Length: 360
Image 1: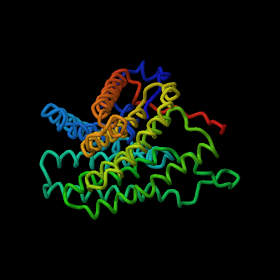
Image 2: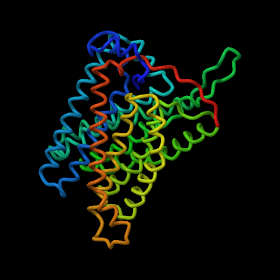
Image 3: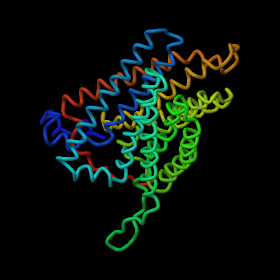
Image 4: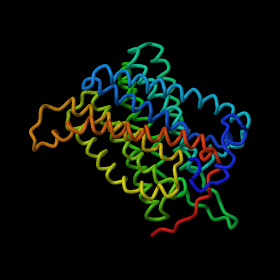
C-alpha cells in the first residue's frame, strides 16, 4: 500500500521510478487507480445527457489517462518480475496483497467498457472481453481457493487461523465479476454476463459477513487497511448499473442505490482513523466505489419520472451532479497526493509491519 508519513528513509532517498529499489515495492495495488479513473470516465459518460459534449470530452480524457496508466504499470510490473521475482512471489503469497491480482482484469474490463462507448460493439472488443472475463473468473477461483487449503502451522503444530487474510480487499475479485456485464451486455453477451455477475452477487454478502466476523472474533483492521472498507460500496453500486442495462424495474435500482449509499455513510467515519497512517495507495480504494455510486445515481435519475418534493426520487435526481462533482474532486485529490508521494519518495518503499490489535 505504500508508506506512511512516518517513513523518513523514503523522503531522504528521493525517488527514481526506474531505479532498482523503488521498483521492488511496486505492488499490484498500484493498478487500483486504473479502476478509479476508468470508473470515473464511465460516470462522466452517463452525465453527457445533462452536460452535453463537455462531459463526453472529459470522459474520453479520463479513459485515455486510465489506459496510459495501465500500460505504464504493466511495463513496470514486467520489469519488476524480471528484476525482483521474489518480491512478486511475496505479493502472490501475502495474505492480503494476493487479492490485488484481480485489479488487473477488473481494470481491463472497465477499459473495455470505455472502449465500447467509443467504438461500439466491435468484434475485436468481444474477443478481448471474453479473454479478460475468463481471466477474472480464474483470478476469483484462485483467490477464493486459498480458503479451502490447509492453513499454515506454527512451531507447535497448531494451525494458524486465516483471519489475517479476511479483509475488504477480498471484495476486489468479487466486484470484478459484477463489472464484467458493464461491457458484456453492450457487446451482446448477456447470458455470460448475468451468470458471471451471479458469482459476485453470491460472494459479496459472504465476504462482508466474514470481514465482520474477523472484526468481532479476531481484531480490528490495521489503520493502513481501513480505506478498503469503502470497497463495500462497489458491489451494490455496480449491480444497480447492471440492472439499468438489463432494463430491470426501477425499484431494483433503487434498492441497490439505497444499499450503496448507506454503505458509504456506514464506512465514512473510518477515514479519520485511516489518515493516522498518512497517505498511501490504499486510499485509492475510495475511487472506484465512489465512481460506481455516481454512475448509479446518474442512471437512476434518468430512469425515474418527475417526482414530487416529498418523494425520495426527487432527492436522488438532485444528487446526480453533486455526487459526480464530489467523486471527481476526491479522485483529483488522490491523483495529486499520489504524484506528490512519487516525487517525495514516500510511496514506493517497504510497508511497515502492522502492530497486532486485540479485539475490543
